[in-house]
Length: 448
Image (tube, rainbow, N blue to C red):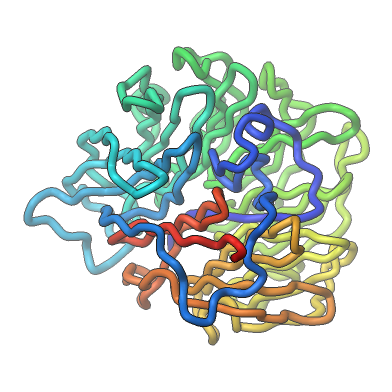
């Protein structure tokens, strides 16, 4: 199973990071400008055209689960290039070294032309070896990328030159996690905050200009895969780090631990994947086996609001999301569950309201997935299903209402035992940018 990605939207209160005010109509990092999966552009279609999607461009690339970032007229994406004569193993859990390289590609947003690329040797030892997991982070003339084997690289965003780099395995004496390094890096002030791993270094902050380590914090047997997130609770900015043994709040500037909420039992198979989500003084977490956890953070010690009672992949209660980060909106939670059941829950209690397979795989399928982005202007949600369909839908406590759908990209990844697309798209310039293991495409979504 692949550790990627996650998604939220809507009426969540998100810490305002510098990215949000610089690139108003860009998508310069994981989950967009404010890291909350809200698309704030106006003039977006409310129904997909009956005569099909309008592709602005399509460009061949290699494999990967890493979604694109869009900033200042450029599109940045990572991919994987297998060595000549080499193929990925038929068993996705095999971890023999697979020769190949990782690339960072910079494309012209107007026509998809590749402007530059940065490539480095990178034998893979990860399960689900299609390619990198992390969306690039673009800020202040630099692009930060993290590969599946722990290569952290800072590049000049205009020309692609290396500014600095770190190797997590060498620098922190680590082994590659089962599904690779997958926590999308976060820029905060002068810091690049990363999920790393190891004794005392689950979370590490680097100087974003030099790569120098500024602080490190927390210990765990494995780091999991959830990205670092910053939210405001009790009047102070708090860096939330969720790993399989606990969820912790840190001071973003120093790494000082504000509080830790231990998880018992630990999250099975290390599958802390979806982004932790905030709604008011609540913090919501969800994972494939262990299910959901809702905390209230209204003091220096968080309290439990509710939690799933079943550790199971099939006999589930609440929400057992695999990789999609849920939407919390107006007191309800919306997300795919463990076998593709797209569910609506009451946020206060975790009680299930309805479920459907329509926006994921269309039927029960292990890890069935769809990513969710909400357009704040229309209130519509844009879902990108694992079948490669783009869907516009209304998500309400009453029901799932599909407005329209169109096929955007073919599902070509066979590793989960069926064909899927498991990469998060970007939304900017009144367009969607999405990739599979063969191409990246840009589709116009402007109203006419």
